Image (cartoon, rainbow, N blue to C red):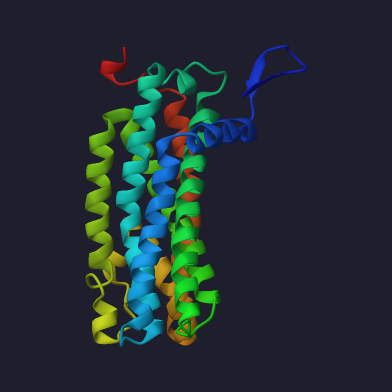
Length: 271
């Protein structure tokens, strides 16, 4: 991961090298297979259901987008917790702490985990969309699936930074617990599981105080990706607002992760 600084002969680490190293490590770990399996299972189960159910397929796609987005706090908590456990078990976080730049190492791990999550989302949405298309029920086309993917991936970035920090500082169980609480908040932000499907409401547009909690942003952005094509006049404004807020928080989260981990002393049981 390190290269040599031509001016001082000191080893240094670049972000692309750190990211590549983390991606190579993660793709060889059980996490990669778990992400792929979850993406396929979710896409097949929900796609098969909505391909034959009597629900409006557009509302079904909206409900699926909300479901995927609301699960992201929990899924990111599990991923960050297990990845931190692997690093701790392989050498008490030496791959992150015994390097020329701890901050870039942590940043690489954050981005690698987020990219793995985005890959699982692509599999889940692609499988779902393929099944609906084969049954002639992909009424809105591919565009809402692409918007949903981009929205959930963007909204998840701050969550990965938060839960990776939690996993490194407090351990796997704390990260998973925080993720489970986040999923509950996310479902509340859209009125509960399948609320829009049952009522016909575009629940992503409703917002409210809970809808502006960052834990709810993957669910809202995923839903608004669909709803912005169902009713652009109502959904485009909230979609832009939440996307801008999530982009800003992602930048702040990345900077905060670098600053914090550069001074990280480790958990007491890592010593």
